[in-house]
Image (cartoon, rainbow, N blue to C red; front, side):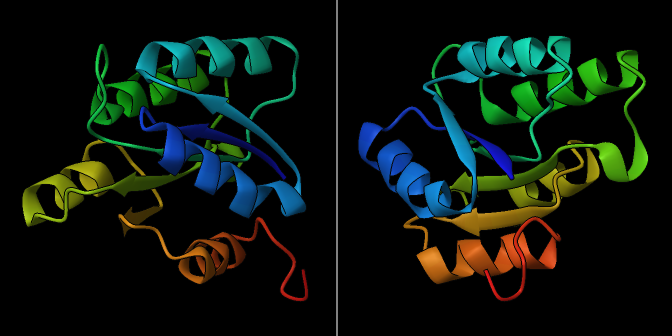
Length: 135
């Protein structure tokens, strides 16, 4: 699994990276602009991300905007269906408006609230077919 953790908080970013590292390559970005650059570079190399853990509240470019742009990049590159990156929104925002916006407008596959429970994150990855059930 190739993952990208997009999180402006250093501690949260590091924690997510450490949780996911045993399951594959895990890159990090501190904001939406870094996310877009990493995502574009991975697409350009023909090595797209399988998973993106994306915070909503970030400076410069929020997670909802980043997700919309990521999906546009995938569409432009001819990526669709089951080949789309799986996106888990990881955020302190647990209100219905943000949750629905993420699923309906941004097409994320899962939504976890902070503080993230490692077992929940791993279980979501298993449900999305990113981690072997035994792994």
